[in-house]
Length: 269
Length: 269
Image (cartoon, each protein chain N blue to C red):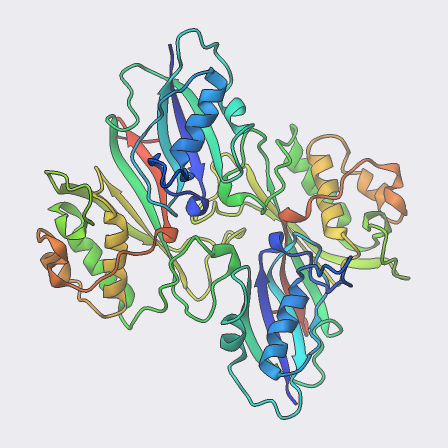
């Protein structure tokens, strides 16, 4: 037996999220875990359970998702990356396959996760190369960036993020530590320079864990602040209260979100 | 009548190129020009001819293609960008619509064009966000970058590029002036930093005109040099000779190529 650690990238658009789902009216949803488990099982000659660092929603992308599986006894050592990539579809790739120690667990060993949320601040058009990869939320208001920065500063740190979770999983403890919320201007696709008008904007979130749709709610909150519908100080109200404290902000759409990486042993992977 | 100049972006993957084609066995190919002409015609209430700066092949993308059309007499002034984008598919967008002078012609007024060719120098995987947008040509050889730079230096300038054209159009004059061939490392999708291992590489080509598939042949030549199958000095043999001078280099695949922009009046658009 060997424990194999996979670093994965996928375009979330064509997947019903990470997690395998029970068939619905006999129809199986296409999930990242499902497609990968099938590929691993074909190579092992038997079903193999894959453990991800965590779920991603339908439509959410990943550039550095981590998963692991144990090879069944008697499975020969092979080049897992090459073997898996030769049968995986174009929207799902193994970037790295490494043997990990028995004590490594993709989910339980994870110390921090990094997500990136991409915005397109223009309503008149979306660059086709950014379709399905941004939330075209439209322009910010005056002082929009300053407001978002002020809100981000209030959100950083250890807080009860119950006001930023969507229902469904309901963990007992909703305290998390947000180590970083920072913004940057990604380069335009295939370029090394950002949009000269500053319309392509991204937020990076790093925390010791995230509640259900927490990043998408944080992104929705930041945009509501940036567009002047909420104030940065509303972050204080939302933090610690359940159910958004009556504040009107959306869960940002899945397509703008990517799981950038998972950090183990306190170091970026 | 008004002459409208459009700046267009499209993902080439779903198009059979720019140019409208005669129906094949009753089936119409989906072309950029065709989809756009249909959208313009719906707004004008009659057929309208669209003139592009030039064709792009099936699978080739554009971030700054230019086209123009004349509105039929009596067409009211409207917001063409908004009106067109509301009916265009997600893989084709109007970035800008401006009224141009009568003497402006998308093709005949063009002074220079800029193309960008993107490579992924790794065989083990392709990042899913780069699929259909790069040629995954595999790693370069030792001194690969230096070799490509030396070849590029020989190709810059005014030359007979007959050795870098594919047959089909056969213009009388195959001399062109390549003002620039330069390489850069694009940022990874949604990031502002390049691949740390230097595997995502792009070449930018600027010339007063390009022969049929000339950029793709130049890219194929550069990669053949970078991988050690040709020498930089082979550029001298290929230049001026018809039919590649017996040199073995491929026409790089369409998916790595984007029309970045068209320059009018000597200034970048």
